[in-house]
Amino acid sequence: MAETEAALRTLAHNVRAARTRAGLSLDELGRRAKVSKGALVGLEKAQGNPNFATLVRLADTLGVSVSALLEGPSEGRVRVVAADTVMPLWTGVQGSEARLMLTTSGPAPVEVWRWKLEPGEEYPSHPHQAGVVETVSVTAGRMTLIVDGAEHTVEVGQTATFDGDASHTYRGAGTEPCHLIMTVHLPPGPVSTS
Image (tube, rainbow, N blue to C red):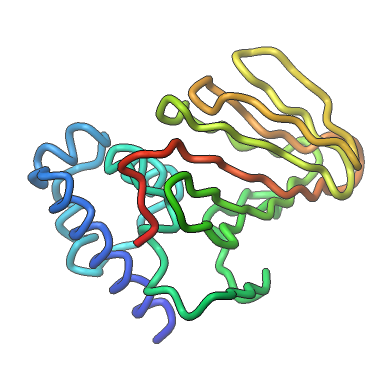
């Protein structure tokens, strides 16, 4: 419980700081990110439990990575993150999940995600800001990647890449769970992991 409270305090601080840097009022951020002002007020007071889609919309609107909203200050030159120490940001009803492992620093950060997709379960993602590029590398099983309505099968040992500003969906395919590593390459510019 203390870990969750600490995570909410970090999220509250990071959202408030990013909103201030962007020069946005609560009303304007809410309008642009399609999040109610009440939810934003609660979030900045470390209350509530924002869902994954809300975090993605806030990050996109603020021009930062999702992990920039979630992470505390960096600790040293090397970070090693174990999957079982990272809470899933999305959990499907059949047991699928997505965990944001880390985001690299620098002018063009990269988010590294671990996903598990159960057969038939899917996650539809809204289009990201222009310049975002995603890759998916399947390490077990098989998935269907849907980009702009076109379906692409990605099997174990294969990697696919696409522009994230298109509508896209990830779906588990086959009879076994699909495990994949996803990277989200953020455009250089105002995006910051600090």
